[in-house]
Amino acid sequence: MNSIAIENLSVILNNTKVLSNITLSLESGKFLGIVGPNGCGKTTLLRTLIGSIRPTTGNVSVCGMTPYEAVRKNLLGYLPQTQNIISNFPARAVDVVLMGLYHELGMLRWPSIKHRHRAYEALATLGMSGLEEASFSRLSGGQQQRVSIARALINKPCLLLLDEPNTGIDMLGQNDFYQLLKELQRSMGLSIIMVSHDIGAITSYVDEIACLNKTLHYHGHPVGALEESVLKKLYGRDVDIMTHSECCHTCQRLKHD
Image (cartoon, rainbow, N blue to C red; front, top):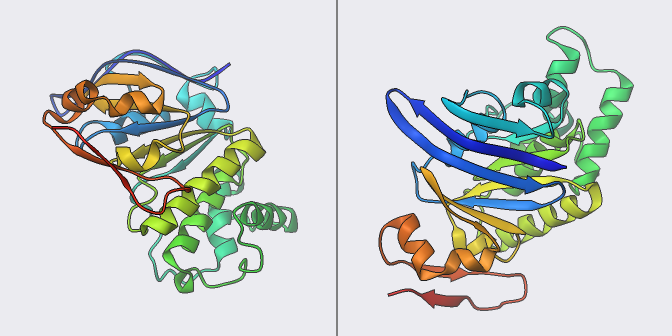
């Protein structure tokens, strides 16, 4: 079964066509990177997958059902680009993770021991054992990011959506983060879709890449996204790409003139 199946999707917002005729599918258990310049519709595509934006035309299927049904059944984990967690929020890591159970708990119901166990388990999966009771505001940026992903995974979804999750993290931290995502993909059988503006950084880690600039210019093996013809369509001009992997000590510069 495919994690997502998008057919002829177009989205018009405020009389502007943001996405045009997108057809895209992803096999279950695969890791897809979505890249493109700022304002190209990447976030809009993710928000369409979680049902917060309705297609103007076309069809969207997530885990074999509508986005609304997938969200209602807790089959989606979503980490937005801008999170509604203030950095100095007076809460513990476990409290932030428990926010992922909002739809299950509601506003007034207090988390049970079982719920807290699930939160501890999610944090352990993200390598945060021993920091469950730590103040969220005192954690490092990378640790806060892991707590936020634990929140997205507490319901054990089949699909994890990440919108620019590595913003503000240095290169070493980014490599560690990508390795973490690969391990989650393997251990949980998780499908992952990650939006990024850095095409060079993610090509070594994803299974497939989709190049988006209002319409889909390429979808396939990551190496194909670095072809000069694809990059020109995507960015509209010649670009220099820096590629990174866990095994390189210096960056390999791929120049496209």
